[in-house]
Length: 290
Image (cartoon, rainbow, N blue to C red; front, side, top):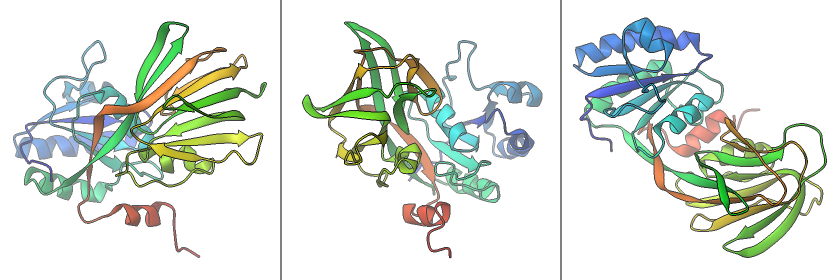
């Protein structure tokens, strides 16, 4: 359960969610009633007279006890990137489409906040991936992923060849349009669309899902979350990219190496105590609908 000792709340709003801006004023009133300071991201802070949620250098301000995300899952992934290694609880209010991560509806938000300050909300600790890109002896990029890291072509081009190793053991050489390396949280995102399995977010696992493999026998593989996965670029194209959570892109070259392992940090997600994961799956995936 989440402690109710909340003194400062930050609001992270998606850039394409103007309707969410209207909710910010109601949040201001609620925070004033409960003597809680409110911070907001970007122009939302300027327009509503809130303290900025991020410093001028783009780093999250120090004293934030809870972040409310108003948007969809993409907005939540952006908030996760802002939070970085700081394990601040995040409550997502869905203004998007599916909303696997933004589980609360707008109608549920204020009752949820009331329960939160009473310490009556549950939290999930979601696995993150540390993603490191090496070129020769140099580390050229280092990021964390909540959903996935994807190696693929940004345009029609030569099919890449990717060698996969798990804990130093050779797995396979994949000729495919790309490869998705996903967390259990990301198993219901791009990986699922590419034929990957649904993995419960409470598990510690890494999912390897080829994208349109040349050999139909190349199927998704689930490995231990304690493993280290390495992808080596053996045949490249001019536009091969590594994309982190669909938002950060790194250009890849022949013989680049991508190392992925479970981060020592987790993403702290506030969730409705009365709604379990399988209920979310049934609702979002419309299971049982004829």
